[in-house]
Structure formats: structure tokens, C-alpha cells
Image: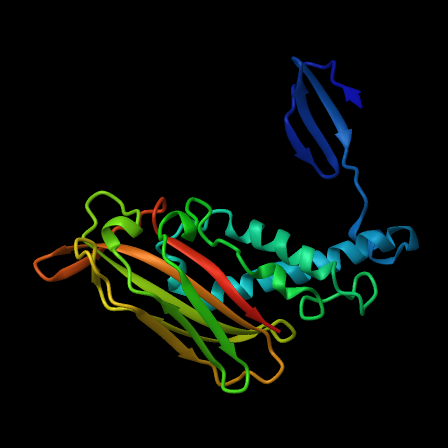
Length: 250
């Protein structure tokens, strides 16, 4: 590290030299760090290359899932969704016991770790809706179903102030983590009143056609609305809207 003693005080970068001020003293230093070319070729950085490869794979898979859901994610707090998904997907990659380090994949890992993932970090589905539901994934037909028993919205839901109605939403995804494509289908319940003491049993079903050997992912959520003169306005309440990954078939 070089200290400046002259009259000209510099801060910033000139070519490969950075000028900065620390503790009231102006200093200069040459840019350091390992070059990308060395990381790509030097045998001593083999572990780094392996880690980078798998991290990149997890990042692309996270983007695929988020883009697949698209506008379905709008009512939820997804501020840190990418980071949380990458962390989970890296965990799955590390369970691949077929491929070598750096070549491990999501599809050969333990995809069951996806089950239970909450897309909204501000609200979990189980803290908003206290209702039992059954799920099924039929790989032969590509049919994904959620059955929710009759319930009382007044006592079985936790809703935001001003909400008058809610909708249940279900989505099915068949992600291809190799070519980064996916098939997505979603469905919604009717607008259901929060003041009605009885909400009829709900059956939500979607059908995926491109099932083959792809994993099938099932997602269930709830959104709240305010009805005004026959129009339903989303409240987009991050503390109450919830979206959860409830089923995986690989």
C-alpha cells in the first residue's frame, strides 16, 4: 500500500491503480485478485470451478421457477426469493450421488426437499388458513389435484383488515432443468366470502401434458380481496397472502 504525500489528493481509479482515503490518509494500491483466466485454467482452482458450476446451475433453476410462476408471484413478498431458492436448490444439487462434483444436477438430487417451500417469506400458508387439504399427483395422466374440505372462513382464516373475499390458487409446473423450459398450468377458486360461515369444499385441478420423466411440482396459495360495487380489488397484503409448494413427484 502506498501513501500519498504530495499536494494532489486523488480518489478513484487510474488504469490498474486505485486511490482512496482511509482514516484521513490518502492511499493508493494496485488492483489485486485472481484473474478469471487463472480460475478457469489453474488446477489449484478446481474446487472453485466446481462450486461456480453448481452455483450457476442453481441460479438458472431458480430463475426458471420464478419465471414459470410469473404473475402468480405478484401478491407475495418475493424480495429475497431468488436467494432462498438458490440456497435450497444447491442443497438439492449436493444430494446427487450419481455425478461428480461440478457436474451434479438438480434432477438427480433429492427433489423432495422442495416440498414445504414458502414463496412469501412474510407469511406461511399454515398461519393464514387452518384447513386440512389432500393433494394428489397422477404421473400417468399429468393431473394434479388439491381437495379442501368444507370450512368456516370466519374462524379458519386469518385475513387482513378491509378484506371481504379470498381466492384459493393452485399451480402445477413441469420444469425441465436441462433445457430451462417448463410447462405451467394454474387455476383459481371463485371469489369466496370471508363473512359466510360455510365455504363449500373446494377441488382445484390442473393437467400437465408434458410429464414424461420431468418432475411435477404442485403449489397452493391464498389471496385476499376487497369487493366494491361488484368489483374485486386485490389487497396484495404480504403479511396474509401465502403461497406454498405442497407436492413434488420425480
